Image (cartoon, rainbow, N blue to C red; front, side, top):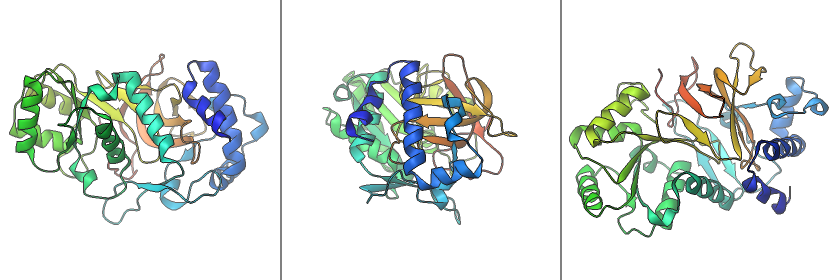
Length: 327
């Protein structure tokens, strides 16, 4: 698929354009992604009968743990790797072009929050910084580099310094986004109570055995009380994707135009719907060099406007570093 066609992915602005591009990407990946093609053949898909995005087969996300999932053969520029529990296999996402990832997350961020240069970005992501090749760290690191604000940066375990920095940013009325893994935000909130009027708290998920599991509602209520803010924002992403969804309020996520979420029936995984409750399937057209059609292990509900909530994970699925709390 040529660069000009790939560029069209980021100009999608309506449902018709999305459908046409999704079908084109499906045909391309079916032809050039060996693992995906074998999966489609295994489940008996007739490629000629695929006329709509809901009919496209979705690759189980577990394949990223056991196979090299690439469209065409290439030497990866980098490999993003998921966190893992003891004895578990991590997912690996082989990235052909990091600039494609950057375009995806930067363009999506600016759709939701405006110019990156106007924001101060703070990363409270200790569990991610302590390992190599985390896609979330790459994203936040790039946002920090885009910022014109000198205070932008990562904070590993120095909560005292983070508190002092946020205090000064609040005094300066500087728009700030605090990207934080869930357990680290809760640790910070328990140690400090700091009214945040100019700072968005962006929860990225992830308890990973660090604390007792809590529902998203419970977590957000604790953070709202500690930081005297009406809403806690959330980012939904994963190692296997190149795009993110954002929730500005009430845990209701919205996607960029080149990303779309569906639900499948857990008892009949080939039955896919655009609304309702089920297990989430994701089309991420930016994932052109890997697989754009992924069947996740997250349970959620999709509304008629395409927004979605995440309730937790299906039974017996691995605990992931970016996992969300079970309701």
